[in-house]
Structure formats: C-alpha cells, structure tokens
Image (cartoon, rainbow, N blue to C red; front, side, top):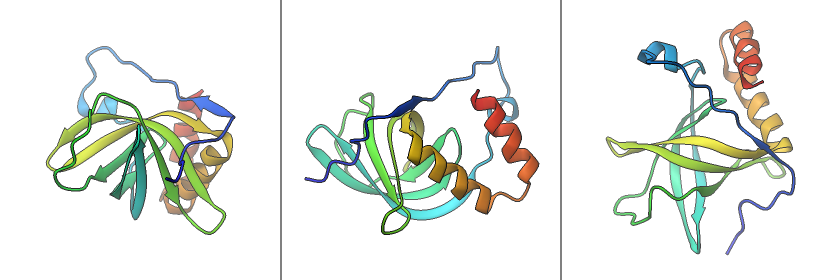
Length: 138
C-alpha cells in the first residue's frame, strides 16, 4: 500500500465563515479546471478519482462508481504533478451530489501548498485575483 499522506509539516487551512452568504459570496476562491487522476485513502482503503477542478479551498472530483466509504471520515489524497512533484493533503468530503464530491482541504504540508499555489498561478487568468485569494488564507 502506498501511503499518500506522510509529511511531518502541516498547515491547517482556516475556514472563513460568513453570515447567511449567497452562493457568490461563499465562493471566494476561483476554481481552476484541471483534469488529472488523484489517489485517495481512508483507513486501509485506497482508490483513484478524476480531478475536475481545484482551488485554494479544495477540489471537485469524480469518484469511482459504487464506492462504499464513510463520507464523514477525513481522507488522505495525493495529486502527482510530475516525477518529484506532488500535492499531499488531508481532505474532507463536504458535498456529494451529481456523481461528484466537493473536497475541502483540512491539512496540507508546506511543500504541497507551494505546489498548489504554483499550479493555480500557472492557470489563473487574473493574477490580482490570486493575490486576493492568498490573502484570504491568512
């Protein structure tokens, strides 16, 4: 079994809460369409999902069909971007609908956060928006 979450340095991702936010107010992080395969792990179970989009807050993935896991348990995940480049994190499944899961970052190691930032930098259309989103992370 491959352990996909074994870094010793983590950043806990702060959750921003708004009072009765509308959908546009809640979405303060731009989603970047990005197609890739990610590995997920919960307990001794490991599976792959199709990544649909990614942001500084989380990801949207398409899980395999007929997977039987407890959606309330946090999972480890890994997105391999190259031979020596990967994003490793702990995530929670915060939404499950239309055959997609919305994942939220719970913990992410420092190197993975740098890779995530670089990935978004390369794909964002408005660099000023990225700087605003980074400042929201605190």
